[in-house]
Length: 440
Image (tube, rainbow, N blue to C red; front, side, top):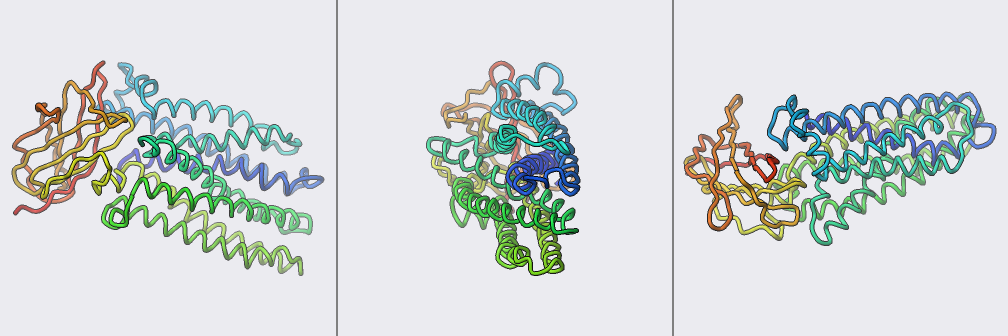
């Protein structure tokens, strides 16, 4: 959990969801509630001001964490310390020659365009045009959805290269519309309830959010099934890999959030809409706000899990189930390391403590053999403070790279890193855990 890349990703995902959520909330939830004289009311002005603070703060966090993410990714790809990636054109190479870099540039442009719309969209009193609202909503959805090209969905083949990214884009937008909009909803609930006008505003917002929530949950469920199929592929992969177990925790949290949302929709929302008395409406509003806070907390954990999953090999890879993989020899340790820029299959035979041989097969994004000038293998034992051991690999007649007489001093969860030198002095580093069994 000490990997700075994990924290950069988690902060960036959370900030992106909140920025997009504020915009989508302002356009589809708050705007209908503020139509007419309420648009310039005290409560509306107060809520807009607070939403502006949330949006600008998280846009700044997205920019800072996005820059950190870029530097850390460039360091991983080049094999250089993070402080050294600013020289020798390393950053520009990542930005111009990798899918991650190009997506980073596109999202930076989207962030700037979104910032321009925020000035008018969240201004205290100005009436908003439908053109501004539509533009802001499209930019917010694109800003969130473009995260797909920084994750596993960007590396598919054939039909997977179409359906998986498309599902992931919809998944991210739906998450922003629901999870990202929970904090703005809490802000509105906190400001409303003092009088009939603000209660009416809260009722309209609750009704609109309920509709948007149902659409978002349905989209998340459908696209989540697609993503799970491509990234796990089977029940054993979910149950017997670290990726799968973490994904199951995410699914459990999602179902818990859906359960809370169901209570809100069928129990508390009708009580708020009945208008039996101001006291009853205020009580329902207070409970809705509490439940929204619980949902938002669970959503924050889900975002952290998503950030972690993006740094791990998908369960379908760890379970050796990709259709292009060769059979893994019995008794071997195997890991598939997957980046958009290249992939490696690492087989250590035998896969237990003692002396062993490592075989490395390199692939490009189309699962064609990746031509490399030099390849090295670095292994780090699971014991704390273990020093990594790096060995050069030699290429065999079949194109695979091999390292002989590896000393595996102990069983456990080792770290394997493949350093690949490509043409043009471009370097690729692929790192993943690999399990070494006790000696036999």
